Length: 168
Image (cartoon, rainbow, N blue to C red; front, side, top):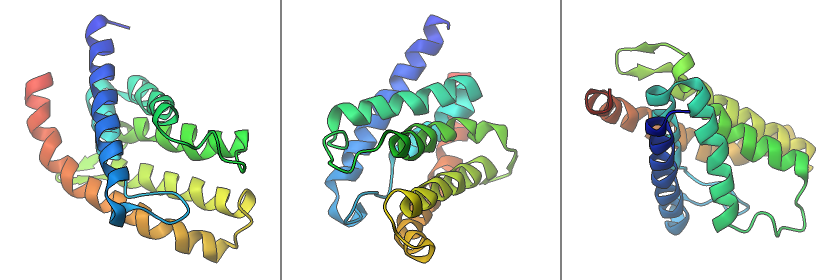
């Protein structure tokens, strides 16, 4: 990995941490049993568009380590390793695949697909690890994941074309 790439990964991780922390401080962005409208997702998708798939996935996975350092999910009595891998490592790592999908003018397909994959992961985990019905898991995860996707779909097409001119 080049020093420049390492610096960008660190920058994106710092931005992710700030936006993730900000999301956690705004009560109406939170779900009662976990999950929130994630502003940090914007940064993870932009990291993929800028750095490519490999470094984008790395940034997403490393973001989980930062989340673990500042949050309480390791102290939960309900903590299960497979659930953690699916709901955190895979769910945030998948944002690194955003650049794999084509964009159609201002419509960023990668943002939509990766948010859908994350929604699917959370829904499956809700059924298998939290003993919720399929309808219950969908009803719980859909509002905040749809809102996260909508925010990212609105913000990324505004930011990325301008940022691309600067970082390339």
